[in-house]
Image (cartoon, rainbow, N blue to C red):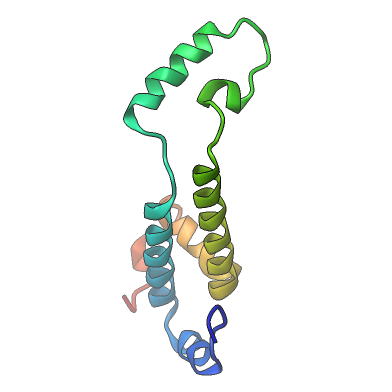
Length: 114
């Protein structure tokens, strides 16, 4: 069934060493982030100019970056949904361990099986 891990897939996932789970999680997260909309190279300068032009103490993201298009919103929401599904699939422990590994709180040799 699409969108749901089969019992066999869940058993395979459970039997993997922690290091392998983290690598798979990071690989899938990288795919999601590659599809996530990001600001183009010219929009950074445009945003900086808008910040200088705003004459108030309070700024909103839409004032700085402009109104989000429906396509951008759809891509962002799709990416958010995929990231949530990834958290459910791998669980909080794998996500926390991956974050510690990426932020260099933990050395890669903490997972010797990889």
